[in-house]
Image (tube, rainbow, N blue to C red; front, side, top):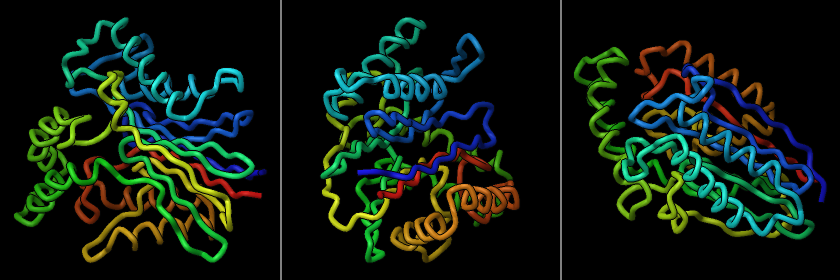
Length: 285
């Protein structure tokens, strides 16, 4: 099974691009990773954030794997998670403090001649597009539910006249901090954080190739901007249609223009002016 690969990774308004794209052409493994900075600040030797270090570690491990070393995507991600924990320990991170842990979401696929294997953690998403135009989500946004309370507070702040991003952020910051304590628990969300506790929350599986046209992998920075009345299906359809009819690059540029026109994050409520944006569009041939 052949594939045409198109990908982008665009830095947002943060100091580092904490996203990463995985391209292991030999094993036909492709993925997106979304690193998240710890609440307790950390800087690497080149001033990298914890989120940057986490995503780059996962990327580098996945890309250097050979066919003799590969033993499934679940084993790959578990080993990357373990290596992340070892690196944090080496750097003096308190592994018992969730506020200090470097974390990352991820979505990876492997293409074979008869099926697609996938694995996902956090809010990175994978969509499968079929020849009849139908769209199938292979993954669930595990962060959306726990983010809902923060987004409601943000929207309520706007409704009561709070119209600066800085003040809105101060309103939601305690809730976001509390949510960090729920990572990799049944009440919270799944995330790669270097701890063995993360591994039971990885989701993985496989689909066959019958009538499968293409695949789209994205970090949350590429999610289609929502407005009142939009359903999740509406937003997914809009995202996929834009990318397939034009390109990932054109979609990202359109989204960036929208964000630049809404610097206080009022029209499209969100926690950053512009999040890092990473995506891979794979057309099967």
